[in-house]
Image 1: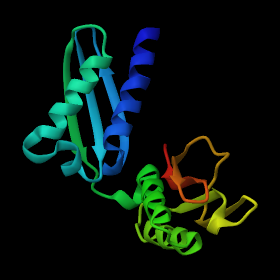
Image 2 (image 1 turned 90 degrees about the horizontal axis):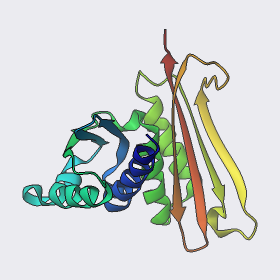
Image 3 (image 1 turned 135 degrees about the vertical axis):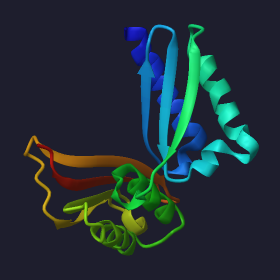
Length: 183
């Protein structure tokens, strides 16, 4: 249903605004006629749940306001075990480093090295674009390791992007992680 698509987008937007700092790797929404299940994969689930479950209750109330029909709603928070192999969590970590005024080259090299230490990752690429180090003219720089077959359809490539708001302007971060082929 088209209404559900719009509601799903609004639910994802509200969740990212409310708990985006928790390192969210993915939000999955399952719907039936009488119930809606939302699965949030986060690297720091303690920030989502909050003290005594207060955070998850507030989030549930916000989501219930978005859903127009009165159906049973359940929010499930799953912990992401290996955060270094998730592209969206890596992009969010790079954003937090850049907003703390760390050098961009050192930051992307550090995150790329930690990703490549995992055996599941066969290749990765990190691209940053914007006013890097506060220069007048915006530019794009990238760093990659391993293999990254972007034109192979059965390649299992995780993609994530985020935006860092620095004092000089915004910097866009894109991360690709190649985890092998799907057979």
